[in-house]
Length: 288
Ligand SMILES: [Zn+2]
Image (cartoon, rainbow, N blue to C red; front, side):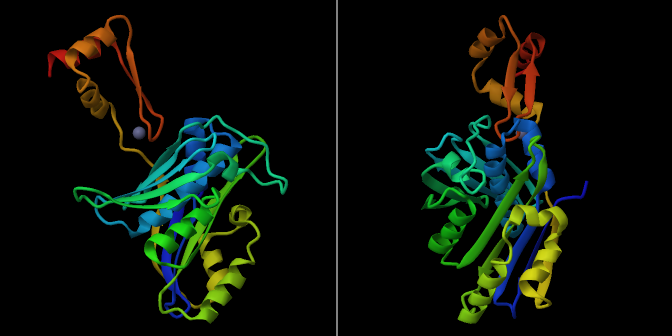
């Protein structure tokens, strides 16, 4: 299967900056890990796609976390990316599904509901920088557009799509973020609006097309790709980290827990399960 990747660049006489990614494998990996429904796959998949693109601006150990805290049945939707093109995430209630909307589209806004969108950038300082905006649509792309406008005073267009087959496999997934530089003229905005309007469905666009095809469709020949990065669903959790976390419960509590059964811990960010049997717990208590 083709590797997911994201391209970043500038276009239209440097008046525009763009990020475009195909993310089919990332969404498929999330689907497999969480047994997603079409609704949760669309919601989490779009958020993972956005986080992978926004992660293109990170450096070193920086991370970026998108959190949709809505009152809909899906609960919180969270995606975190880093500067290496790695992204991970979860949805509180991945088993939730809703009937499709009248137009035949997945009801992502119904699943997310109203609430707050948080974007946190952790750059190793004492506190991460956190931008918040109210969730305006719950369709994710429009909410990120609103975030860029009110938090970063940037005019942008964000398109995100996940296409799920009737058998719950992912047919295609991907997205774009296009931002107008402050010095961009009105005509550039209008031209872009027209070009973006050519795409009726971003999810189906990526069935047969690549991010480079989309760049050409939007900008003709007037663009420059500055970066091209592989992106992957990847979590760095491991059993040792969870052993350390278990120890914070205190040895008495651990002994109690381990008395009659093994302990299972689950990584929130990737759903990987780690089992500690009685002997391992004893060992942990004795050696710490
Ligand atoms: Zn993990």
